[in-house]
Image (cartoon, rainbow, N blue to C red):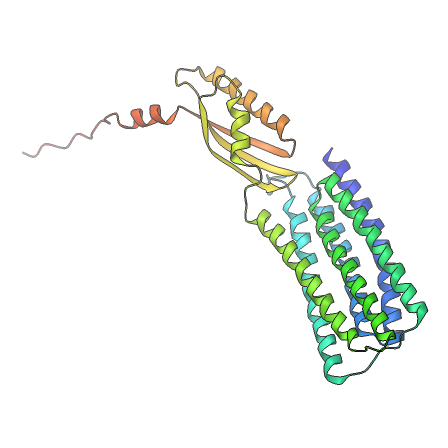
Length: 307
């Protein structure tokens, strides 16, 4: 059931939120203790993971509401809007990271690196890898845009943590410039995550096709009474799709029989594509019949005779 799905998504978000807060606090404290701009940047990046979890929880709580008179298609796009809020957080972090790294390049300085700090960064990296694996797996299982978008966010955190860990080792070996360079790498990973989330959200909000037209037509044509179809359109998210199409039937088909055939087509489509939320079918004769009928002469208005 849809309510069970949203409950499962909410549970995943709460678990991930707890882990992200723990990782962010460790990184920020460690960053200020060592003076490493790369760790501080990575810490605030992790903190936005937590903020995005909160946004996701809010988005899911709204998206789970059933359709109403003002939202006949449901509230599912609020989940997409929540993923856009995650994107906003990422952009803010991107700007902060770039500013911090440029400042270090201009003013110089080297962080204080010690083995315990490196061990802590390695531990947070392992936790992030586990979070990404868990959230991505649950996102695919539950077909959740928020979980998948948040997993992309956290995946960028894994890459940045790896780069920061490498930079810390480099600083320890006498290469202090690796600290701001790692911050630049962090910015690159964050920018890539921004682009990925923006693409997915724009696909949904821009009503890009979800199910291939030929795949839909193959199911429709499997019903013997159907002569053909056209104007096949799909839109929505990966697991909440709306489909409408024009169905060609013999023009001599009685209305009740035509209606029954349309339901057969709809049932087959819903069975083949369980992600369909609704299917709207318009019944009409084949184009040749429609064209023939449109060419029939229409009565002309009688003009008054002038005297």
